[in-house]
Image (tube, rainbow, N blue to C red; front, side):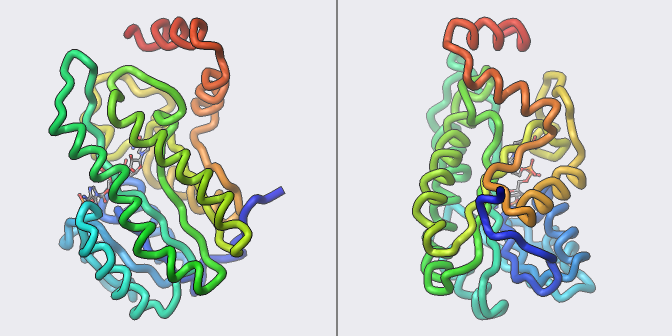
Length: 256
Ligand SMILES: NC(=O)c1ccc[n+]([C@@H]2O[C@H](COP(=O)([O-])OP(=O)(O)OC[C@H]3O[C@@H](n4cnc5c(N)ncnc54)[C@H](OP(=O)(O)O)[C@@H]3O)[C@@H](O)[C@H]2O)c1
């Protein structure tokens, strides 16, 4: 049973991809453009967005998700250009590995500003349109790192846990309005974000495959889209363990 409206095909769908300049977002944007969707591309790096849009009818609307006024202004531009919003995918995010003995308040604030306040700014900017349309959808890209506490993810983990919680609440509130809410929880994907990790990443997936899984899951109307399953299924199992077993297992597998 699908929890959200299905999307039978991407041709003509009006999609705003926020965080489209690199990694999973860039791959999602390319897939959508190739499938005939009408796409608006946002992130801070205008040059990278222009390169993706070149030779297509995609529009480029650069923004910094931490800048509330800029996000509101960008949403107005996207609405004017596309006429309506069938789907908004919020991928903008950053990662800064941190453990408690290197706690850095300024880095924590910066990470929360991008990963949590950023999506809230996007939500504020698109909710009135989605509610007025009584259709369309919003996808939030969180992470399996938001399931439970993990080493190196002292602030990243809570930022993604908050997005998971936010998506659940949004689903409960928006379903009755005919609006789809999609929660994307990737495992490890090879992108600029993970290329700074100094540990072996199990079941590392490439960004093109992650994009396909993301779009296929949304098209199928799933609420939670997680991949690669051979990795995320284990994390789902760890998620339900009692604390003594959970802490033992994480220490055992990560060496933390
Ligand atoms: N890669 C993984 O293994 C993995 C796993 C789980 C979850 N995720 C999540 O997936 C999402 C995409 O990550 P990725 O791996 O594809 O990383 P990425 O290649 O670093 O992409 C991050 C995207 O967010 C944009 N961005 C960052 N800060 C921004 C800001 N202040 N305003 C607007 N855009 C901003 C970046 O563009 P600009 O720099 O041009 O602004 C870029 O387009 C993130 O939310 C990440 O947490 C990734």
